[in-house]
Each structure stands twice: as structure tokens, then as C-alpha cells.
Amino acid sequence: MSPIAPPWSHAPAAKRFVLRLFISLKYVTANVVDRRSGRVIVTASSVEKALREGLDCGRTCNSKAAAAVGEVLAMRLKVDGLATEPIHANAAKEVEKKGFKNRAKVWAILNAIRSHGVNLVIDGGDGRTDHDVPRW
Image 1 (spheres, rainbow, N blue to C red):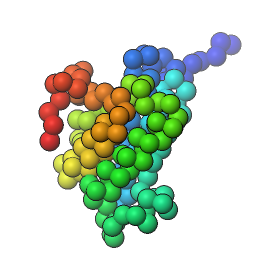
Image 2: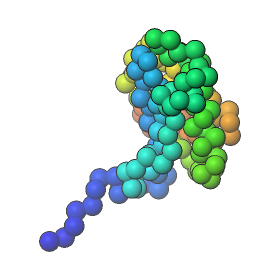
Image 3: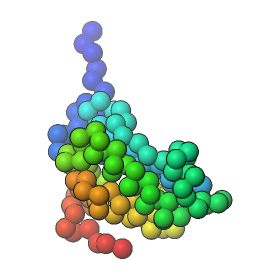
């Protein structure tokens, strides 16, 4: 029998690292996934004790907490030497998936990552890249 390769092993080299966001009412988590291996390479979350203590998240997390998660993720990417690698994020998909109310949180994370020197490539839903995507 020939082994069957997992679907993520055929990921094009151009989109090897992908940013995935998980936003709930209480928490914000951002992961960078290596599509070749299907594993999470770097993660940051408002659940972490160090982040949680420094934030004003009572019952809900706001865009300030989301920006803090983005900053921590960016620092961890720099430590791991991945800041220069292109990290792809589909902003339109993340906003659509999270709902209109979370648009500010999604963009807070993306802007914090980018402002800390990470090579973040924002893809539009229809194949557009950075230059065509509107800024909110």
C-alpha cells in the first residue's frame, strides 16, 4: 500500500505559514500554523497568566487585549526567527468568521503584528493581497 499524504503537505511554499485567530467573548488566541506539517509553530493567548494579569479583561476582551496578544505573538515570532518569513492572514475570512462585532479585534491583532516588524501578508478573500485590502 502506498502512504497517503495529508492535505496540508501539498501547501504551496508561498503560503507555508498561516495566521489563525480564535476570538470568544472572554479570550483571544492567535496561532501561526505551518501548513507543511499541520502544526502550530507559535501561539499567544489572553488566557496566559502573564497576559491576563496585565489586561483589563473583566467579563469580555476588547481590542486592547487583542492588540496585546498580537504584540506577544510578534515577539515570539522574532525569537523563533520567523519574523522575516511571510505569514499569511486572510482578513476578510477572519472578520466574516468572527462576525462584524469582532472586526476591531481582528484588525487590532493584525496591525500589532505588522507594527512589530513581522512580514505579515494580508490576503483578501478573492486572491487579492495587501495593497488591495481596505484598512478599517
